Image (cartoon, rainbow, N blue to C red; front, side, top):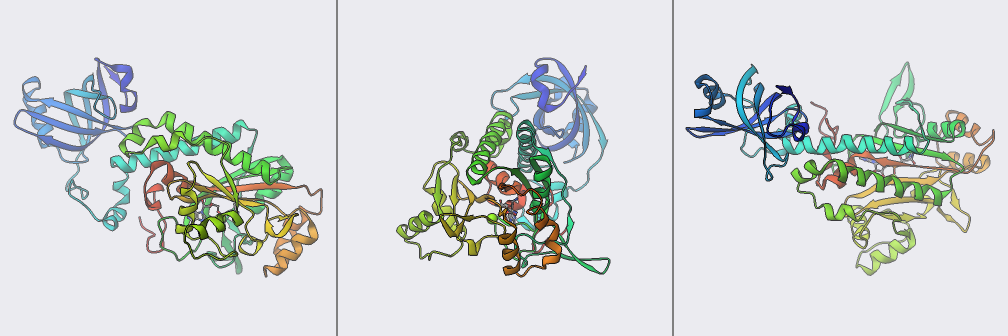
Length: 430
Ligand code: 4AD
Ligand code: MG
């Protein structure tokens, strides 16, 4: 008898195994019980037949309640129709610990109820599939960047510096000094890039955005590579290779989860570098031709981004935004200083901006001027300006929003399901 997991059933076809998990759901008639079993690695159906089992075992199969923890023995049978590809003919069942009146039942529940029970809801099939894909994306990102010779840098979460505007900072009292929860690791990554060449941070970031949209969280995770001697072009080339790698890895390793989510994988198969590049100017023309009332100089809203992205079959870079609507640190385009050498990467199918990136200003005087124009306290940025004083080089980087990437690859319409415990305007528990 072998202990195994649902994910590894394929190695045990036609033999008897032990699974340790939970009874997720059940359906039974007089002579047969269908047990939905889960063990953390996946879901599988166990079939318990009355006249093949000792009486007390079959009775337990019939009476057992949802989310009771169980140890099941059974024979692994091939079943083409099952998402796991297998079914278990139950030979024994033991209850480990009971579960009384489990709140999430087969009936329809509202989203707020489910979010209130997130600590339990994450056990369910769809949520399990989404978070499994999230973990795979995490892993793919690290595989790719580590393989490219990047060094992982831990940037601080408590910081005195803002980087992405001062209107959405979570402020805190740091021993009577003003501090913020980090909006981005970028400024620290720039220091690290000049020490290590190619670096990335992968951490939580915080934005006090009072918006209730399908794309915004107040705490989200960002992957931020930063590279010395990379210009704007090299920056985009790295981004498209990273995205191609992530999508390929999810397609290869998460077939079962994508099936659970009914994801149209045909759209994902098309995600191959190079990605199209258009300028902000061209995007504005596109919007106007599409009947949108849009003025040069404005920032794109979700419907604008969706329309632009719909014109392409894969992610699209929109580059050279007006400097006025972008962050202070972006390098001006030498051909037209009104726009910057940065790009947003828009995901297909209406998922919006998944990456924001740019070449950084590497000239001391220009950066100082921008910091002053932005109204930031220069003394807190002296260390950042130092990087332009001691061997400054052109450098570039970007931030990939993990949750928006998960939403896109899973094909789900709200970002709240892409993170284990979402932090949103009206939600801080569980
Ligand atoms: O475009 P953003 O603000 O860029 C930066 O923070 C840069 N400092 C990154 C860098 O160059 N190192 O954010 C980057 C990405 C966005 O493209 C989006 O995917 C995600 O972070 N993002 C959010 N995701 C969820 N909820 C929010 N409120 C988000 N704000 C940004
Ligand atoms: Mg952005």
